Image (tube, rainbow, N blue to C red; front, side):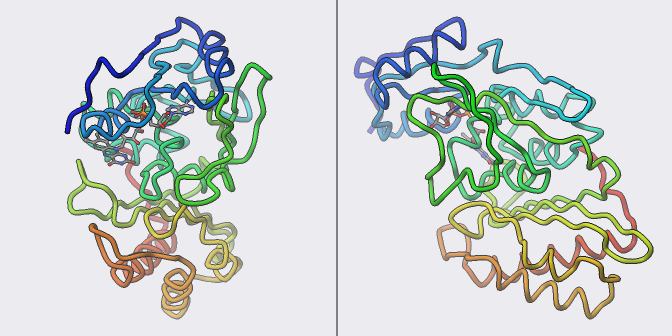
Length: 294
Ligand SMILES: Cc1cc2nc3c(=O)[nH]c(=O)nc-3n(C[C@H](O)[C@H](O)[C@H](O)COP(=O)(O)OP(=O)(O)OC[C@H]3O[C@@H](n4cnc5c(N)ncnc54)[C@H](O)[C@@H]3O)c2cc1C
């Protein structure tokens, strides 16, 4: 059954400070709404329990992308379209642009935000594996001030995260040291657009003197939270890419994830696909094939 608008209160403060003050005034009572692409689905289905919504859409403090010498800080209110159109992000963080390009359709990309994708905390969220391999850090803000923490470990379980009820994600910061890496990203779903991932994978790697000097692999939709495949990475590091290593990597990657059967796929399919994507990534890394940016 559809929701009745009369049951809801929506406030749209002009500045970030007003929004966090409202959150602090009654912790847990006010729910932030950014692009609304997740929340409005719940609302339309009559399943949005929060009755007080504070709009953070288009707050100027959340819409900036700051390019600093050592890092780039993306405001949590930046949309997928903002990410796709940004020059430095496109050049140095192509995995994020690729994830943005296959998140829903164009309308969704004009409205859905990076902060919303993180806070919605779906294990299948497409941008999160990229944040893991780029070693993103999050800046959280409240009336108490700001704190900065690594994205890895932010999601602690299915739909659980280290975000207090009076906090907002203000920005996502990525260190600018991966531009020389080969980047690989794949989404496997019923189709690329308008489909939730059965498996999504982001990889970064660098070969030096014929061996894997550094490799980073993260996967979504295969566990309660997006996972970095640390054991697979450990086994690969320092080795030349050979058919035997590809076979080993497929096995270890498939064993490292914790997939479930659900309406979109089965655990067996997800394990097989994860292994195959890891092998495909390593094949490209070995061949030195650059990934196309979106
Ligand atoms: C048709 C359609 C297709 C989609 N396809 C995909 C897809 O392919 N891949 C994918 O990953 N997702 C997909 N989504 C989901 C959605 O678009 C994304 O998760 C999007 O990034 C959510 O951002 P938003 O700003 O719209 O979030 P909202 O709906 O506004 O909020 C989502 C949650 O995040 C919280 N929140 C938002 N911003 C902040 C912040 N700055 N700080 C703290 N909490 C915050 C809200 O309180 C809420 O709990 C799709 C959705 C639709 C409707």
